[in-house]
Image 1 (cartoon, rainbow, N blue to C red):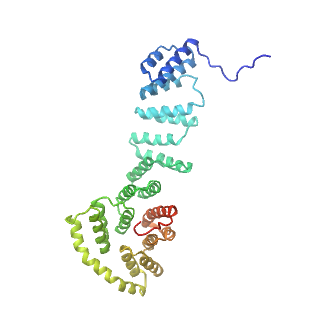
Image 2: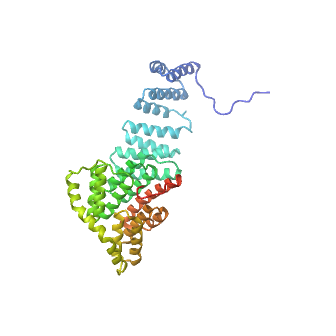
Image 3: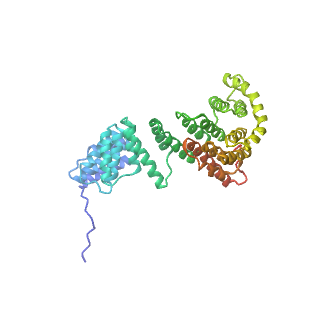
Length: 398
């Protein structure tokens, strides 16, 4: 019975070429660059497939020497042959695009990525590489859609998004003045990377948004403090100044004292020393006036007075009382409902009602939506802590 011939094309190499190529390959694998270089230089390909093998060895040699330019040239030599396997061609075209990017040939890099895409290679790495190419070409507006696309595709895949991708997207949104996206990206980043340092970085950068009203800024500083992310004299000083500007004298006094206790402020630091002298007598009066103010708010025709009383209780970290007054203010109306619901949600969460806090924050729209969003991330983190350790319920000190 005749022996059946093997299926598929038969690869032809002369015996001498095969022997020389195997010796070169062995030298590369052994890390013997000098020997490998000499053996590769001696190769004399006489067929298309031998030319492909020789180019492949030159590529491996260039990888060994970390010579990106030589890697790119070797790939071009491989593409000149008709022996590149069809299954490898799409990925190799992407690699060619990457190498052209590395050596600074950005137009060719884009052309190779386009070619790879026509062959079926359209990975997220190619999308991010396009973004990097346009950044190198100083075209951030062209780069940004590709970064956004890469993040969307990574989310859809269920794979984690690297912190560096968030940082790139945030810096582009920042440069474009798209503060809505800056806030959204920072909040998403904080759901994955939630250390005190990450919180400080996100909030401090977001606080530079132009036109942000002082009450909004105050609640973001409060969030920074809630995360244990107060790290500098500037942090404590700015928080105290915003609290004083809002009429929250006891809160301003407390944050200065906390800054001094943490070693970030000194008693002789001019700005906060002056502020401390001013707010100390006012804080006592503010606290003493609260019971009468609450009684008056109960009979007021709208919720303005109740909102002011709620804000005072909130600033004193008396969150259950603040919840009661925010609800009264909302029921009476005539107030900024987004501000009231934001602080109601925070006060509920700080009182330990995490689900109630999240529900209140979900009702917030407009300029307060980003504040509510950041605090919602904090609530989610507290909820995870409680789930992991039910005995450690959220508290004002959390």
